[in-house]
Image (cartoon, rainbow, N blue to C red; front, side):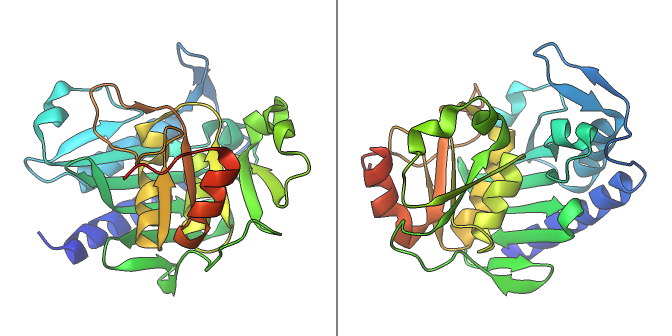
Length: 261
């Protein structure tokens, strides 16, 4: 299986997912509440089904927010990690900050991915060695080395709770938006400069975006300093930072994150 084949599968899956989503109108969708309080809609489950039909080949594992987890994935070298609708709260509320996130992980490393952001008309895909494209056009992380004047995308929920007040007076501008997958994809595409989360995230929230950041010439790391690894028995990360590779040293210093080789 070639990386071109992987990317073709991702592009097909995202196109099919957007066809499904076109049947729904954001802001006018019935939803129910999961046990942990998050909303879920018919759109989430319908997209999950079409992604699972399209992506995994025999012998490949599967991890999705909307599918019951199975330990079988832990024995697979190649695993698809997806969030059928990242930003469901925004989708239900009619806020145009949501998308579909797909990642292919090999031996714990996200090597290819894609995020479709229908409200913005963007489909962002990429892979190791192949770079990133936005709607078919080449893109990538911005060539930055200083925090001065950059734009950082913050979690809308974290920002609303006041957790970003600690960065008042920082040399960068902060823009709050929903969907961590979308934020990561925009950094990978050079449409924003950096993003980080102050709370833990599930693997399906960030795997696709991390794959894109890597492909676009960026870096992603955990608060403890090392790179994120995926397809863990408990698929949750303590937090995540993503930025262009040239910005990594300054941002690690600012956040107090030591480099871990």
